[in-house]
Image (cartoon, rainbow, N blue to C red; front, side, top):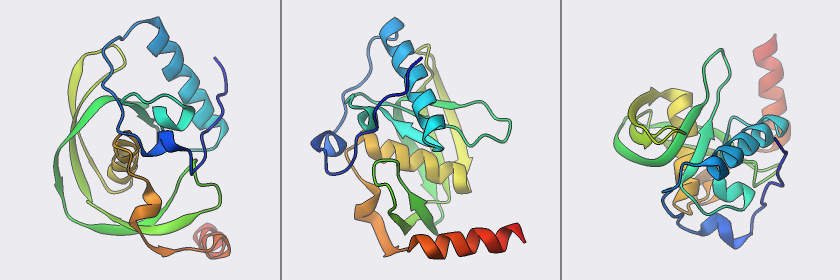
Amino acid sequence: MAILKIVQHPSPILTESCKPVTDFGDGLQVLLDDMYETMIDADGIGIAAPQVGEAIRAAIVDLGEGQDPIWLINPEVVATGGKETEVEGCLSFPGLYGEVERPYHVKVHAQDRDGSWYELEAEDYEARAILHEIDHLDGILFDSKIIRVVPEEELEAAEEEEEE
Protein backbone atom coordinates (compact mmCIF):
# COMPACT_ATOMS: atom_id res chain seq x y z
CA MET A 1 0.00 0.00 0.00
CA ALA A 2 1.10 3.53 -0.68
CA ILE A 3 0.37 7.02 0.54
CA LEU A 4 -0.84 9.00 -2.47
CA LYS A 5 -0.53 12.73 -3.10
CA ILE A 6 -3.77 14.52 -2.25
CA VAL A 7 -4.93 16.78 -5.06
CA GLN A 8 -5.40 20.36 -3.86
CA HIS A 9 -7.89 22.96 -5.02
CA PRO A 10 -7.93 24.47 -7.69
CA SER A 11 -6.96 21.35 -9.67
CA PRO A 12 -9.50 20.83 -12.50
CA ILE A 13 -9.99 17.12 -11.70
CA LEU A 14 -11.80 18.17 -8.51
CA THR A 15 -14.60 19.75 -10.53
CA GLU A 16 -15.05 16.90 -13.03
CA SER A 17 -18.02 14.58 -12.97
CA CYS A 18 -16.45 11.15 -12.44
CA LYS A 19 -16.92 8.08 -14.63
CA PRO A 20 -18.65 4.97 -13.27
CA VAL A 21 -16.46 2.11 -12.10
CA THR A 22 -16.86 -0.95 -14.34
CA ASP A 23 -13.75 -2.98 -13.48
CA PHE A 24 -13.56 -4.30 -9.91
CA GLY A 25 -10.25 -6.06 -10.49
CA ASP A 26 -6.85 -5.75 -8.86
CA GLY A 27 -6.24 -2.19 -10.09
CA LEU A 28 -9.31 -0.89 -8.25
CA GLN A 29 -8.48 -2.91 -5.13
CA VAL A 30 -4.96 -1.43 -4.97
CA LEU A 31 -6.35 2.08 -5.54
CA LEU A 32 -8.93 1.64 -2.76
CA ASP A 33 -6.29 0.33 -0.34
CA ASP A 34 -4.00 3.26 -1.21
CA MET A 35 -6.86 5.76 -0.85
CA TYR A 36 -7.65 4.34 2.58
CA GLU A 37 -4.02 4.58 3.73
CA THR A 38 -3.81 8.13 2.35
CA MET A 39 -6.99 9.18 4.17
CA ILE A 40 -5.75 7.73 7.48
CA ASP A 41 -2.31 9.32 7.03
CA ALA A 42 -3.98 12.71 6.41
CA ASP A 43 -6.21 12.28 9.49
CA GLY A 44 -9.34 12.35 7.33
CA ILE A 45 -12.66 10.57 7.68
CA GLY A 46 -13.39 10.39 3.96
CA ILE A 47 -11.69 10.56 0.61
CA ALA A 48 -12.86 10.38 -3.00
CA ALA A 49 -10.93 9.11 -6.02
CA PRO A 50 -10.58 12.54 -7.68
CA GLN A 51 -8.73 13.70 -4.54
CA VAL A 52 -5.94 11.29 -5.50
CA GLY A 53 -6.11 12.09 -9.23
CA GLU A 54 -8.56 9.41 -10.42
CA ALA A 55 -11.82 10.60 -12.02
CA ILE A 56 -13.86 7.50 -11.10
CA ARG A 57 -16.91 7.11 -8.85
CA ALA A 58 -15.19 5.63 -5.82
CA ALA A 59 -15.00 7.02 -2.29
CA ILE A 60 -14.46 5.88 1.28
CA VAL A 61 -15.91 7.08 4.57
CA ASP A 62 -14.50 5.82 7.86
CA LEU A 63 -15.59 7.43 11.12
CA GLY A 64 -13.55 4.96 13.14
CA GLU A 65 -15.46 4.18 16.32
CA GLY A 66 -15.08 0.44 15.69
CA GLN A 67 -17.05 0.54 12.44
CA ASP A 68 -15.86 -0.89 9.14
CA PRO A 69 -15.05 1.58 6.36
CA ILE A 70 -17.90 2.42 4.01
CA TRP A 71 -16.85 1.71 0.41
CA LEU A 72 -18.90 3.90 -1.91
CA ILE A 73 -18.50 2.68 -5.49
CA ASN A 74 -20.92 4.17 -8.04
CA PRO A 75 -23.08 5.62 -5.25
CA GLU A 76 -26.48 7.12 -5.89
CA VAL A 77 -28.43 9.15 -3.36
CA VAL A 78 -31.90 7.57 -3.15
CA ALA A 79 -33.45 9.81 -0.47
CA THR A 80 -32.58 12.57 1.98
CA GLY A 81 -34.37 14.16 4.89
CA GLY A 82 -34.01 16.93 7.40
CA LYS A 83 -31.47 19.73 7.42
CA GLU A 84 -28.51 20.45 9.65
CA THR A 85 -25.71 23.00 9.55
CA GLU A 86 -22.30 21.91 10.82
CA VAL A 87 -18.65 22.73 10.26
CA GLU A 88 -16.82 20.83 7.52
CA GLY A 89 -13.29 20.68 6.23
CA CYS A 90 -11.76 18.94 3.23
CA LEU A 91 -8.41 17.28 2.54
CA SER A 92 -8.22 19.19 -0.77
CA PHE A 93 -8.66 22.54 1.04
CA PRO A 94 -6.10 22.49 3.88
CA GLY A 95 -6.90 25.04 6.56
CA LEU A 96 -10.37 25.92 5.21
CA TYR A 97 -13.35 25.17 7.44
CA GLY A 98 -16.91 26.36 7.07
CA GLU A 99 -20.50 25.86 8.09
CA VAL A 100 -22.35 23.82 5.48
CA GLU A 101 -26.03 22.91 5.44
CA ARG A 102 -26.71 19.29 4.45
CA PRO A 103 -29.50 16.77 4.91
CA TYR A 104 -29.54 15.10 8.32
CA HIS A 105 -30.52 11.71 6.84
CA VAL A 106 -29.43 10.00 3.61
CA LYS A 107 -30.24 6.72 1.90
CA VAL A 108 -27.66 5.56 -0.64
CA HIS A 109 -27.56 2.76 -3.20
CA ALA A 110 -23.93 1.83 -3.96
CA GLN A 111 -21.54 -0.98 -4.75
CA ASP A 112 -19.07 -2.45 -2.29
CA ARG A 113 -15.44 -2.93 -3.29
CA ASP A 114 -16.29 -6.39 -4.68
CA GLY A 115 -19.02 -4.95 -6.95
CA SER A 116 -22.01 -6.17 -4.94
CA TRP A 117 -24.86 -3.66 -4.58
CA TYR A 118 -26.13 -2.58 -1.19
CA GLU A 119 -28.30 0.12 0.41
CA LEU A 120 -27.21 2.19 3.34
CA GLU A 121 -29.07 4.65 5.53
CA ALA A 122 -27.11 7.12 7.63
CA GLU A 123 -27.81 10.10 9.86
CA ASP A 124 -26.04 13.10 11.30
CA TYR A 125 -22.24 13.15 10.94
CA GLU A 126 -22.09 9.91 8.95
CA ALA A 127 -24.68 11.20 6.46
CA ARG A 128 -22.75 14.47 6.17
CA ALA A 129 -19.49 12.65 5.40
CA ILE A 130 -21.15 10.39 2.81
CA LEU A 131 -22.80 13.34 1.05
CA HIS A 132 -19.52 15.32 1.10
CA GLU A 133 -17.72 12.44 -0.66
CA ILE A 134 -20.52 11.87 -3.19
CA ASP A 135 -20.36 15.60 -4.00
CA HIS A 136 -16.68 15.07 -4.91
CA LEU A 137 -17.71 12.40 -7.41
CA ASP A 138 -20.07 14.91 -9.04
CA GLY A 139 -17.43 17.65 -9.17
CA ILE A 140 -19.11 19.66 -6.40
CA LEU A 141 -16.74 21.16 -3.83
CA PHE A 142 -17.66 22.02 -0.27
CA ASP A 143 -16.36 25.59 -0.60
CA SER A 144 -19.32 26.32 -2.91
CA LYS A 145 -21.69 25.34 -0.07
CA ILE A 146 -20.06 27.26 2.79
CA ILE A 147 -22.49 29.55 4.58
CA ARG A 148 -19.84 30.97 6.91
CA VAL A 149 -16.08 30.43 6.98
CA VAL A 150 -14.95 29.27 10.43
CA PRO A 151 -11.48 30.46 11.48
CA GLU A 152 -9.16 27.68 12.67
CA GLU A 153 -8.79 29.42 16.05
CA GLU A 154 -12.56 29.17 16.58
CA LEU A 155 -12.44 25.43 15.83
CA GLU A 156 -9.56 24.88 18.23
CA ALA A 157 -11.39 26.78 20.98
CA ALA A 158 -14.53 24.69 20.43
CA GLU A 159 -12.49 21.46 20.59
CA GLU A 160 -10.86 22.56 23.83
CA GLU A 161 -14.29 23.28 25.33
CA GLU A 162 -15.52 19.80 24.36
CA GLU A 163 -12.51 18.19 26.02
CA GLU A 164 -13.18 19.96 29.35
